[in-house]
Image 1 (tube, rainbow, N blue to C red):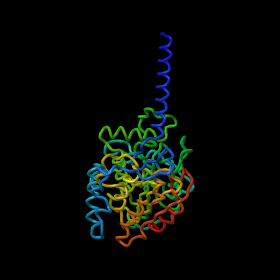
Image 2: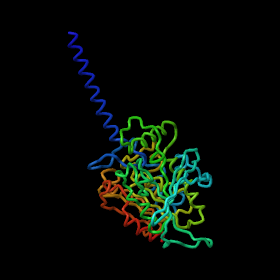
Image 3: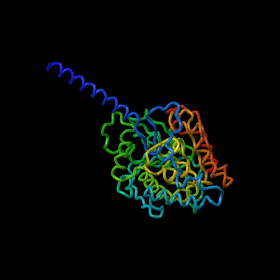
Image 4: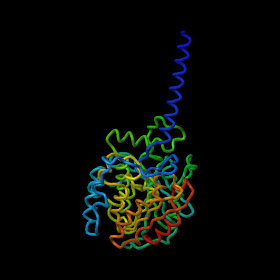
Length: 391
């Protein structure tokens, strides 16, 4: 009899262990990502989510309910951005602290010079960024009798490959690169390129890899996001503030042409880029690649309570009529692929540009890139857009 009980207990223990392994695997495979982060699993036949009607109210500051004609736009924009700053706890640009960077390393290539800097953020976390300076002088202008260049500030998407992915610097994670070496490509054309290491990723990874498997590409950054929310902080807000600090520093550089500064972001970098452009002065052009999807329609990301006030495309619509590049890949198997098919966010944002008769300032690209299932920059259209808007 006792032997029978032992066998039953052994079977129960084995069953529970197998179930635990399956649940853990599913949890790691289906990690919620941070407000536009890269999705690490495939989603076939993606459909709009259905929210019960009792919860499904219009956002208080959504574009379509509040902007009927051109005169409605500025009051709506001001109200929305004020709520966005308040909700995300982001200071005014004038109150953003100045960076005092230290040079960490420098290296010279045939077509550009690379410098790596370190500085302290407003909350005393280390900000790491790279500057790529072109040998190509085709973009130079004259700024107060000093030679100056147009600049592009790039915010990487998620993943521990981070800024090195953008600048195409080899690392142990090079096989996971998905930014198409965009920073290196743009500096060769004559732009000064600044690349921030996004908080929680790349060289700014935090040692909180509980239950993360090796190689840890996306896990620890997502875990950090959840830990920070539990502690009353928002990783997205901190990333926006970091980037605003860096933008302020870039604007003060004598060799940067302030009227020609672009901000670009892929995936997670997209919402950061749109927020920084919306809240900061003197941003000429905004580039968002596979980084904007309607939270209301697709459930993308994790930003608790924000949908009571605004959706991702509402924030981007405030950029009208400034130059804006939006792209999605038709091969993406996620909410971004769904946006490529439906153009829900693109069409909403385009309405804001129509108010100003400024459709020529918005470029909407659906591409068929296959790298990383299309979750990447499409370089040809991006370069053409920059040539048109930045020279």
